[in-house]
Image 1 (cartoon, rainbow, N blue to C red):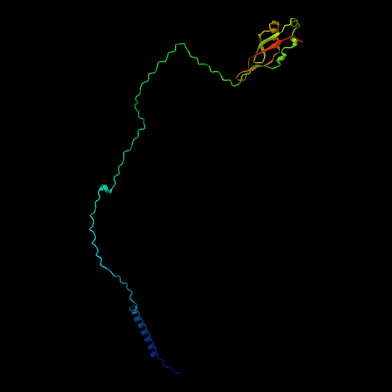
Image 2: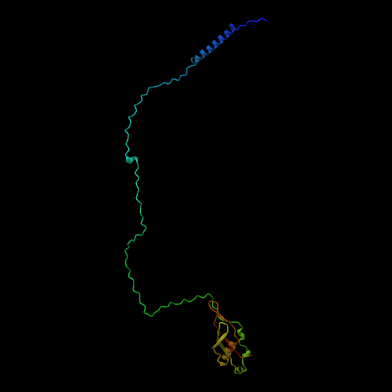
Length: 219
């Protein structure tokens, strides 16, 4: 078996390549540093004029504030007391003379008239409850009166109680014959019936009734 000694040395081609790479990197760096010289210069030139500036004014003197101006003064008013009691205002008065009233003698009194009550119901007089034509008839004419031909008109007034009953009879106009006058009151008092009169309050009261009867000879 034979061994061959191998030695690794850099070849001229690889060395040339490395040198070329380094040269290219150096050229690039140099070119990059000179790029700013290749850019056009952009400068805006503005014309300027020197303007004189006035000196600043001197500082003002400090104003000292007095104590009265720096702090406001607080004034407290005393509490107001209100008197609620009315004040009597004097008025000038003039005495007025009062006339003397007449004296009333002792034992003398004044009576005021009693007012008349106003009726709340129209008063109604007594009125017959049966037919007045039947109070006297031809049968009441006696034969003795017929023989003497006694005739005439008798006027009378009846007093009516609150019950409607006839209490009395008075002849106000005579026939001229006492027999006929007496018979008139006796028969009417016996036969007449009445509705009682009514007062102002509507209750039954006593009243009166006036009428007349004519005595003639029967047929």
